[in-house]
Image 1: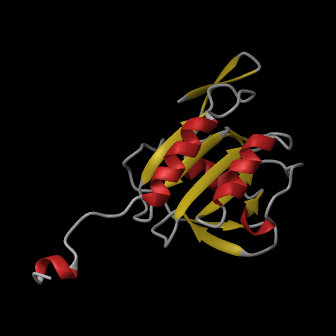
Image 2 (image 1 turned 90 degrees about the vertical axis):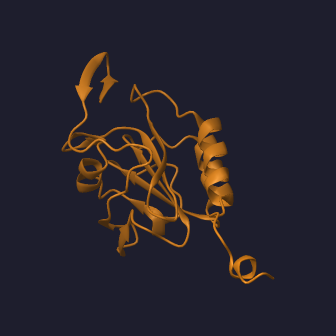
Length: 165
């Protein structure tokens, strides 16, 4: 996949990820010093947001993160320390390996602007990589898809149904 940076086309490095595919697990160091394994099956929906610049976190995106932070694991991964600092437990500048595994690596000092939503089963249900590093996310689509992913209930037989109750 290609993105634009100052009218220059850049091919993102490593593994491209697709909706419906399995998310990779990765060990990442958070801003508070804690190491977390993220990306695989979890008891909540996970959101991975990569931001290229210190000022990339818009006020609206920050409010969406705050709206869902109790219902989902929302991780902010950036190549620079973010100015609009949020919850340091889920904030990281340990972006390089993550950006390679998720296919959003520009180079050793920069990542693309992206959002991935991973359901509880560890599968991608949403992916957005902004075509130009200075553009904004489609925050309406992100908000709607995240809300739907959080509310999703797996279908299948439940104990009472197959027991005739």
